[in-house]
Amino acid sequence: MTAEDLAAEARRAALQSYSPYSQFRVGAVVVDSEGRCHTGANVENAAYGSSICAEATAIAGAVARGVRRIEGVAVACVDAARVDDAYPCGNCRQLMNEFRVEWVVVTAGEGSEVRRHELSELHPHGFFLPG
Ligand code: THU
Image (cartoon, rainbow, N blue to C red; front, side, top):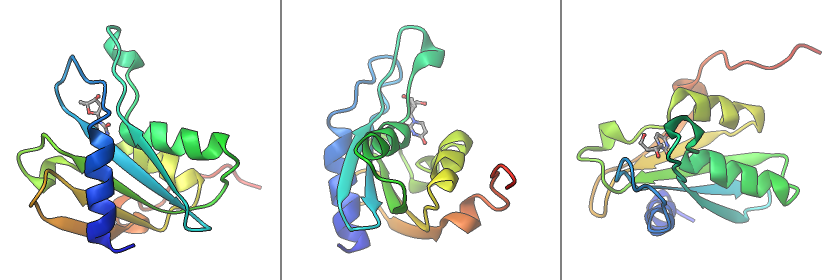
C-alpha cells in the first residue's frame, strides 16, 4: 500500500471516531510485520483524561490480536486545519516505540498533504527497559 492509500484508509477510520468533546476526529492504521492492517479511532470520555488516542486504540487492537512487531502507522486528523496540527502526541510516539514502528504517515483531511517520517525522527532516544 502506498502512503496515499494508507492516508485514505486512516481518513476512513477517523469516521468511527467518538469525539463529542473535542470534535477532533482522528483515525489510525497499524501495518503489522505481515502487512496486515488494524484500524483505530480516538475514543473520548466525559472524564477527559480517560480519552484514548486513535493510534493507541489501533495499536492496542493489533497487539490484542497477537501482533508484536509493527512496521508503520498512518494517522489522519480529518478536522485539522493543517497537516502540522495532525502529528501524533508524545505518548503515542512512545507506544509506537515499544513495537519497533519504523515509519509514520501523517495527514489531515482529504486533499491535504501526506507526509512520511521515520519514527526515529519523530521520537529519537525512545525509552526501552534495559535488559
Ligand atoms: N488525538 C489522537 O487521537 N491522536 C493524537 O496523536 C493527538 C490527539 C485525539 C485525542 C482527543 O480525542 C482529540 O484528539 C483531541 O486532543
